[in-house]
Image 1: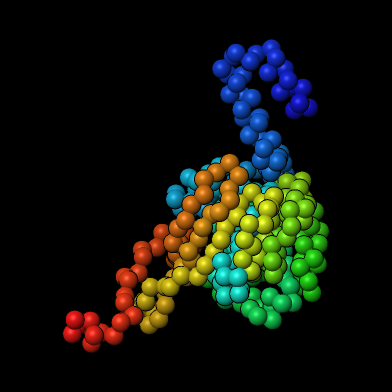
Image 2: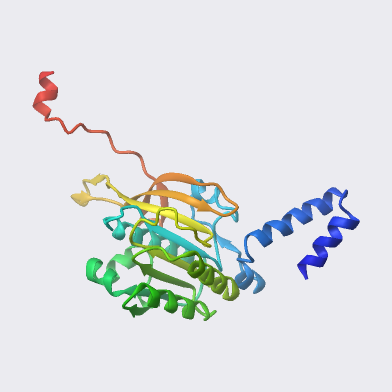
Length: 275
């Protein structure tokens, strides 16, 4: 039905400023691939703010779009940032659930990921505000099985979020299938790739590249304090890329911009004093 309306606007009212604005809005909706088909059509929100202005203002919907595929890519090709990537994805899910999304979360795991990272730790998840009782786990042997489980899960509109962990980023065709499934049901999908994806094309609405960052030392707990990530929004359809040093505040259940740690030279202190 959209094509005739676009044609009508273009031929009969092309000099009307209001019609031009409406036409541009329709084009933006089509370019975004009807990503809000599930949630918006049901009268719900089309996005949920991440709670940090620096992030929300670069996202086209003022928050993380619902009913769409989002990618979290771990920065290290050797998989050293896999834990950081998974932690950032959990933080995103926590923000979505805090925004009022109902239903359980389906987490699709691969054997390789469990062998290196271990099982999800319930107290740690609870520290992010994610109730372990809302999690459903699907275990798979290979990446292809993880993607299949994600597609099956995205077909169930009663789920809030579907998370999948794979070794490498899927090809364009596989990501497009996930995006279409998410758009049809309104269920949001997060795909965490443990190895750096390079420039692999993707149908995901956003791609976040995540690396671990040093935490500040907390005197109160005698050790590292809030988790930190160096996050690059590499791809954002309709939005603006960016880079931030983020920190998760357990007390507020949200993101914050972290202050950079003082740059300390690796040179021995005695040498610095002598110089």
